[in-house]
Amino acid sequence: MKPWSEALDEPALRKRMVDEQLRARGVSDERVLAALEGVPRSAFVLPEDRARAHEDGPLAIGLGQTISQPYIVGFMSAALELTGSERVLEVGTGCGYQTAVLAWLAREVHSIELVPELHRRAVATLSALGLANVHLRQGDGHRGWPEAAPFDAILVGAAPERVPQALVEQLAPGGRLVLPVGSPERDQELLRVRLTPAGPLEERLLPVRFVPMRGRPAGLE
Ligand code: SAH
Image 1 (cartoon, helix red, strand yellow):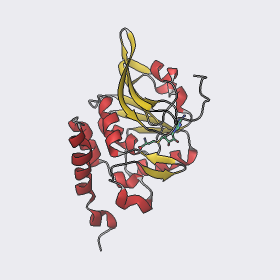
Image 2 (image 1 turned 120 degrees about the horizontal axis):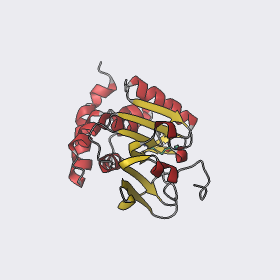
Image 3 (image 1 turned 180 degrees about the vertical axis):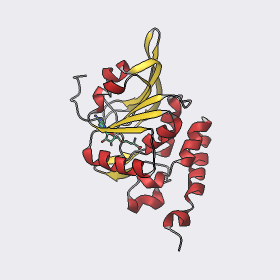
Image 4 (image 1 turned 90 degrees about the horizontal axis):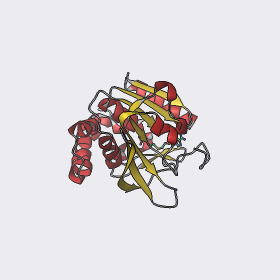
């Protein structure tokens, strides 16, 4: 008997996910499309949700957290403008799916997760996939990862109320920080902060809805 993964023909499901949810909505970076076609999304969802792994929306991963919608993962990855040589920081590892996509797209990925149980699970999932260019840490991402800075790109998967200053400070010249900003009750926006020679330049990309960034109380960054 074939295992369920073959029965579901996941490569075909991923190709359809990429065509219908990303390509059709304007994500055109071919490396990003290939990454979402290649990374086994079903390995990152709860076992009981495997058949739903390629649906067009976020899914609960336990502990009140979610795996982001495929379109959002693709959109944010493309917004980082990666070519393969970059060192990337991710804040909010969660299940590690976005981490695996970044590991496909960049040279090296550092990722921080606040919740110890999610951190442990991501370590297990990502090491089972044999990703050698990923470094995971449990802690509060508001402070970034100073020992590994600077980063060419930083992606935040939870929404702080304001742009955390430490993250801007850990960008390399020309670096991009992509993050949702806003309160859980109000509308959030996806921003890209680019470190230009004249200083940080902020662009608004998309209205979004993310889980709040926790840890350090608001107003102290
Ligand atoms: N990137 C994930 C989704 C992440 S959900 C994906 O692949 O789909 C957001 C994650 O951010 C959650 O796991 C949450 O626990 C984590 N998080 C929230 N506040 C944080 C903080 N201050 N530092 C690090 N991680 C944080």
